Image 1 (cartoon, helix red, strand yellow):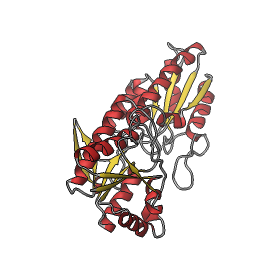
Image 2 (cartoon, one colour):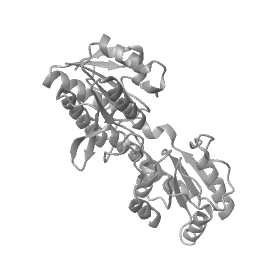
Image 3 (cartoon, helix red, strand yellow):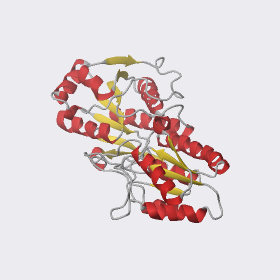
Amino acid sequence: MRIGILTGGGDCPGLNAAIRAVVKRGTSEHGCSIVGFRNGWQGVIDGDARPLTRDDVSGILVVGGTMLGTARCHPHKVEGGMEAVRDTVLNEKLDGLICIGGDGTLKAAGKVSAATGIPVIGIPKTIDNDVVGTDAAIGFDTAVTVATEAIDRLHSTAESHNRVMVVELMGRHSGWIAVTSGMAGGADIILAPEEPFDIEVIAKKIKHRHRYKNFSIVAVAEGAIPAEGSNWTGGPTIDGKGNPIAGSIGHEVTKAIEELTGFPTRLTVLGYTQRGGIPTAADRLLGTRFGIAAIDAIVAGETGKFTALRGEKIVLEDFSVMSGKTKWVPKELLEAAWGL
C-alpha cells in the first residue's frame, strides 16, 4: 500500500513522533510506502509531496514542530480544493491518507473522506485539548508543562516585589491550559472561557488574600470574557467575528486589577512559547501510539475515523463525534480551580 501523511493547523510538540511512528510501522510491519505532504492540506491540493523513509525520520522523535511543515488550509473552503485533493491522490497512486491536526484539520479530513471516498484516518493534535472524543491530544501535555514552569517562575518575582502577576495563556474557546497549569502552578485566580468572570469579585478575592500574603498569581486564558451585567470597564476583548483579540484580555485584566485594588500588577503573555520546543515524554508516547494505531487502521481498511485516547487504550472514533464540537473544561474542574 501507498499512504500519504500530512500535518495541518498550528504546530505543536509531538507531531514528529506521530510521523515517525507511521513511517517506521508502515514500512517495517506492513510493507507500505509513505508519502509526506508539505504544509498540510495545501500540500495535497498543490501535489507538493516527498517520499518518507526510515532514514528520513531518524532522530526526529525529540524535535518539536513538524518536519512536513503545516498550514491552516481546508480543501472544502478552497475553490476546486476537493477536486485537487482527489487528483493528487490519483496521481500519487495513494491508497489512503493520514491527517494529523486539530478540530479544523480533522473536520476537513471528515469532509474529504465523505465527499471523495478516499480512505482517511485522523490523528488529533492541539495544545488546547479541545477535540471531542479523546481524553488528550498531541501537544497538550507539553504546553501545560511549559505554562506550569512559567507560573512557577513568576511566584518569586511576584513575592519579591509585592505584586499581582497576570499570565495570559493560550485557549481561545476552552480553558484547558489555563485551568490545568494554573492549578499545577498554584495560581490564586484562574479565568477560563467556560466561566465568564466578574472583575470586582476577582479584585475582592485578591484584596482578601493580600491581608496575609503580599502577592497573587492570576492565570487567564486568552478567550476568557467578562460576565454580562458585571461592572466591566475594560476595553473590548472580542472582535467583530466573535474571536478573542490576541493579548487583549490579559492587558485589560491587568489594568483593571491594578485600578480596583491599588496593587502593582504586571502582565506576562506566554504566546507561542507554549507550543514550541522539545515534547515531553507523554507527548512523545502519545504521538507514537497514535501513529501506530493510525497506520494499522488504514491498512486494515478503516476510514472516516480518528485515533483517540480513552483511559489507557487507543481507540478509533468516527469523525462525526468531534466535527463542529468543542471539548469544554468540565464544571467539576472549574469549581476545583476556583475553590483553591
